[in-house]
Length: 197
Image (cartoon, rainbow, N blue to C red):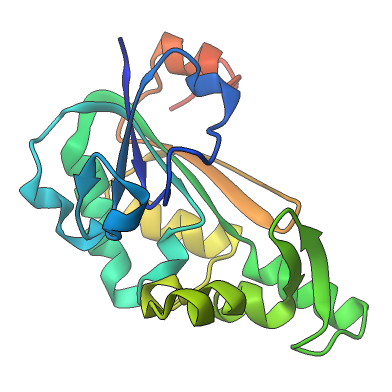
């Protein structure tokens, strides 16, 4: 069975993308309240066993680290990944958020969109979901950096992910990152272009 490490996923009650159906799902989180399988700060993942996981899934978590800490997190991803594994990243698209705010003449506290958790303001996307930060009292829910497709590509390449597939839409950037050529399995699973470097 293939193994997925869900980094910063908060709780296993939050559904994963259906492509991971049938995988063994292990949750890594800094907050023990969500009952993660691994309680760990993602900046220290190089202390975990190496080459253990077929994929690392990190949805709306990378922006919770200061920009200078992002390389540590990505080094941890590389460390725990098997040689033919991949990273699946989702982050807010800060460029699209700014463009939408300007085009729609939105102020920082205006609602950008409605989510299952409630209204999300421009401020929430830039600085973190204020309701959760206030409710929990945990500043690790705050956003400390932001990404566009270009800047996410740059940090992934600098971390040694040489084969990238980046897309944007719905105010987020989605990336599949490999240290080498994508395997036939990953190419089919992720519906990637059949030829890649």
